[in-house]
Length: 216
Image 1 (tube, helix red, strand yellow):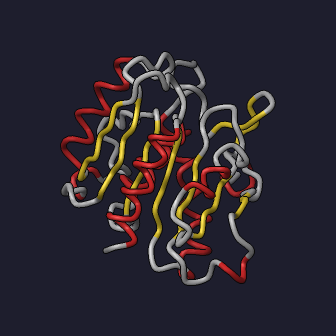
Image 2: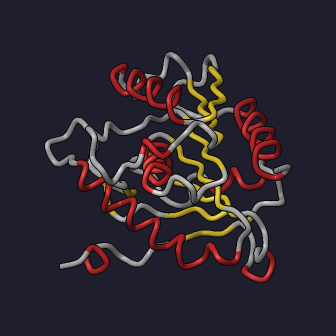
């Protein structure tokens, strides 16, 4: 059975009706574990209005929400599961990207793992990546992750709180080593945000998107 049969058709919420988003840079939002496509869409009103913003629901039901793949500490986790989820999103992006001059990814928590995975699988497809309180998965040399093709030119914003109680130190260490080697990094630390997003961070993300995507 193919993944297309296993996973449901993508559920996507847009910030604008279809007739208002053609030709605009696309910003794809990828939510965290146990959330849904509504979780991040409110950010669209706080980000530059030049973007057409799409928030995608993860394919696997998890409690009242959804997940992209099982938690990395669970017995059900596998890199193949991460790759199935990324293929799910990439297939959807492929159906709509022709209508947009660029595609940028924004992921929160596990959504950052997804966003960076998409970049690693398609190193030339994305204008920029925003990662909020998240991490990069350890690909263990899997050839589907084309890290060698990432030469440090793709801008990546990584915002987090050092007191984040959710993202474990091993994930932070791996992510730190990866971003320093493979992307053009903007890294900002916030105090008192914990595992979340605050207004100051969204202001910084807006500045990043304006400078790195809209003005290019």
